[in-house]
Length: 144
Image (cartoon, rainbow, N blue to C red; front, side):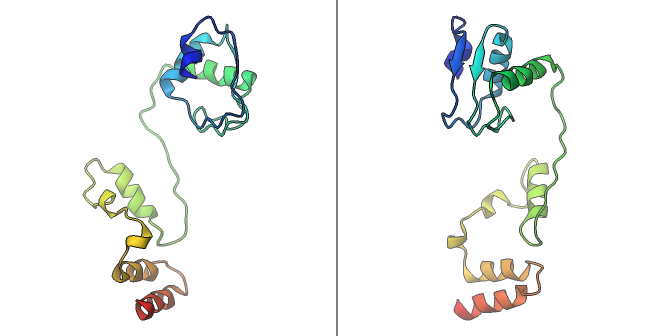
């Protein structure tokens, strides 16, 4: 995609169904500058950026990139809603992404479950906030 954006002699590019997942913002802006002379199809790719998913045909892509190029104000603030069951780490995640220096040690705590010891598993199970959380913690202790 970078090559297509960089080569002004390319006027048509069908890159549909190629397992692309994202395009850098720099490349998106280059493409935005080329959309009057470039017919590009990225449909059937699971794109998260640009946020068109599998619908990034030439028309939708052109509309999105035109909108992107016309926006001159950088995003300085976003709103994010974190949803989930109790005890899964929503608050920890929210603290971690809003903290500049990670005082909670969140990054250090990101280890695979298979590496957790019995004490950590019991602590996690007991904080699930469900009717069966204590039973789960007891089961882990009994099997540990």
